[in-house]
Length: 304
Image: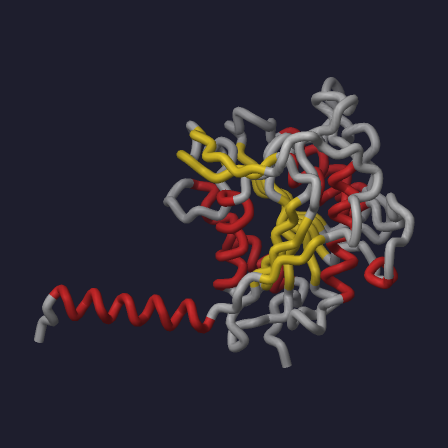
């Protein structure tokens, strides 16, 4: 028998409330016990704004970050695989695309049993830091983030050997820089969290910038690929109007030549900022390819 609309609405509401009750509340952790090291600070207060993107529509941005933090979003206990990914939103190192490349990514990760940890790293560039270059502060925040998550892994239901990092646009550069700079921490030890390794176990880079030198087919100055660099997955589109797919192609070749496990997907169309949205466009398949890639390394095994 067909139920009246009022009953259907009530059922839908109860289901939504049940899902909300099952999902763990976000955990917000300040990254540094005091001021972020090496930071000149900002006079303006942190703020959110709605960005009218022509590519993806309105989306929330965060800027003026002086107190870096982690937002930990955990999957339901019965779904948890023990794998975690630190999420680096893009924004050109000026802003953080918090909704499109942060909250939406964490929701997708939770749906497949992965803990999503959104990194609120310091933006925008500080006074005196050159435009068109990655600033130094975010890498310190990302290294600290990996160590904090690893040191608190048991508390958050995470396998300390399955902590990856995923980045979008400028955040892709940050993810790669973190995955390749583990041999030298860029700040002095702060506390016991820093006794845990700052090397992520894998890295995922989406439509990254700052990987290829401006006028040459070689890596961006300052990037190198040491032995022990973790596996890397790269995805991009050929028609990206913000960051050329050559950034990912050059990085893939460098990783391959260095003997690092790497996988590259360049879609014919899809432009920039495709995130994890399932909208029927070509790049929307990258999330399933990513899961297959993770499984190939045994990174999505259920928690015992």
